[in-house]
Image 1 (cartoon, rainbow, N blue to C red):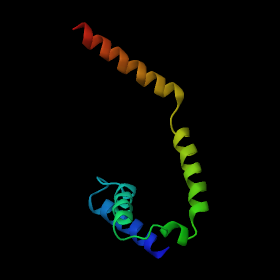
Image 2 (tube, one colour):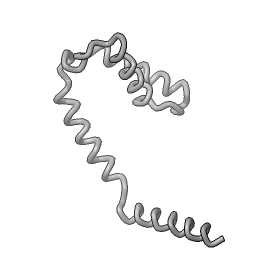
Image 3 (cartoon, rainbow, N blue to C red):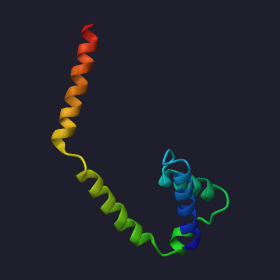
Image 4 (cartoon, rainbow, N blue to C red):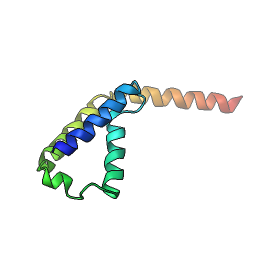
Length: 91
């Protein structure tokens, strides 16, 4: 658990230093990716006993990110983009 917290803290540190140009989850994700390929144990999350907690959080995050978009706003944006594309084709 401490190793996971250190990796997430490192990602947060890099995010702060780059003024969020590199997101914390992006940096931590890359670190986990290369870590699992090289030196991190494959059972890191099993050993920390947080898989059930992670499954619940992923579900909640998916639902909340879907709530952020209003359907009318998305449809309006898509319509505006298509209108601009058609206008560009006419010229």
